[in-house]
Amino acid sequence: MARTALISDLHLGTSSRADVLRREPIRRRLLEAVADVDRIVLLGDTIELRDLPLGAALAGSRTFFEDLGQAFAGKQVVLVPGNHDHRLLGSWIEESGDEERPAVLDELVEEPHPAVRSIAGWLGDAELELRYPGVWVRDDVYATHGHYLDSHVTTPTIERLSVAAIDRLGGVPTGKRSSAHDYEHVHAPVYDLIFSLAQGGRVTNRSDRESAPPAMRIWELIGGASGRARTFRGALLGSAVIPAALAGFERAGFGNFSRNFSTGEIGRAGVEAMHVVVDRLGIEADHVVFGHIHRRGPLLMDDGRSAGDPLWERNGVTLHNTGNWQYVEGLLGRAIPQSPFWPGSMIVVDDKGPPELVEVLADVDREVLAGRAGLS
Image (cartoon, rainbow, N blue to C red; front, side):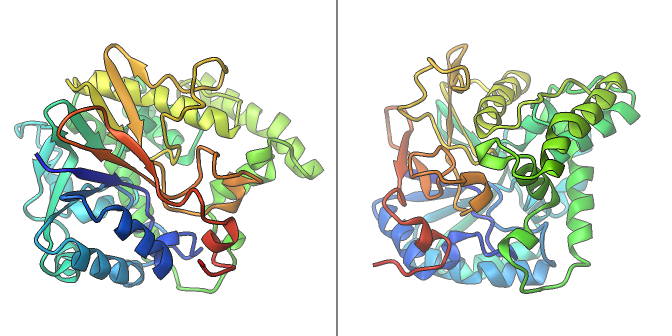
């Protein structure tokens, strides 16, 4: 058994430059933290393929992979695609609709997108494997990106609404899933459309706020991390326009959606939806590691006494979230490193014992994470 580190949601190559691992001192911090690790799992959304054209996104990730390859020469790197880098699966995407193929939980993707060959070249002497929809880290520990939870989450994200629309148009009750085939049949067209739209984009020097996804800009307008809208327009959107639109979606049979847009609800709802995925896929593991929602945990503060605390354990399964490696000002607000969304964490799995959450950047100033100051 190898000592394994899992990190996710790096979003390398994003136009907003929010991917903190683009900065050499931050990369050095990570590589020092995994120096005693035998294997590293990049658990989804490693490369941002839904923001800029493919070539630009890959160029923005190359230095990271080259540095990782030097650190992991002779060791294993496992790449598990998520929703933002789903295209790396290549021909597997079409084959996933073949109902005669067994829907396994850990499949070696042998014919991925040609971009994976470039990544393998950058990794040098490190051994690269592409696995999907997840990987068995240990007999009792399973890891997957977690994007299938968008079939069940009550937070009205763009992807949740898109998946619900496909379900509704297909005449299938929202969220009825029992295999990876079922999830891919509905999710893959959404990912493919967003990826295709990004291929027509241009590389620009927009500000972080200008290059943020539309959903993030709307969320910030209605209050963001603080929950308090700063303008009349934002207050009107949050209190009347968006709730009315969601009511319309519910009447049309798209599912039920929360009117709570707080960061606490993002975490709670995401963990709740992931429990549904574990149940639907029949994942028989004591521990399931995922990413996707950017909310690391469980944390010591998650004691269950607050109404917003995620319930990480259910039916004998404990969930663990890797967190993220993005500095998103709007999501953090005035947060300190104790924020569940603070970047720079990973999950480490040893031969035995529960997975451990390791904070790598908890002591790094937000000005450094934002690229406004250097790391001393």
